[in-house]
Image (spheres, one colour):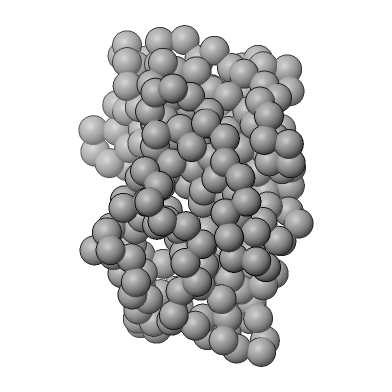
Length: 238
């Protein structure tokens, strides 16, 4: 999937051919999440829209499944969407906005059910748990907070120091958190690994020579991908 100018473009990764173009967002797409089990796509935009794209194919989630090109509009009027995702129950979606709002949507009723405000300032990064129902967010003060998706209450906090995160990525059963340095790196440019249950650093990766704004984790949780530095390099590490 490639966000561009309000469109979402679906490519065949083997052939490189464009398969589908999804239209509907009124601004650039800033967040995407795909659910393998049901073949659903969730998207968020810079104009605060949250859309659900459901399969039109009876074999939901299969490699050849087609997705209905008409979106289900879950939410509108939010701030810039930083992150979207599905909760483990398969019935709830989450969207995190730059202004600190964490919004929850009932996918069956197709409505926003509740929202919480994670910070009084702007957020710089976020991630949503894949095996645990948690949301992690980082603000401009370099404070990382952990929220329960079930209760909507804060359940943890990490004081990251002066380094302002560029991205957050949960892994290892959502017990570890990769925090990349996006600002105030002080020449160290370290990407830190945190144990979020103990609120302690358990590792670091210093190979990038400048700030890192993007990260991802492989489906098996064994490999980490970071992107950035002065040469815009992609690094894969274990």
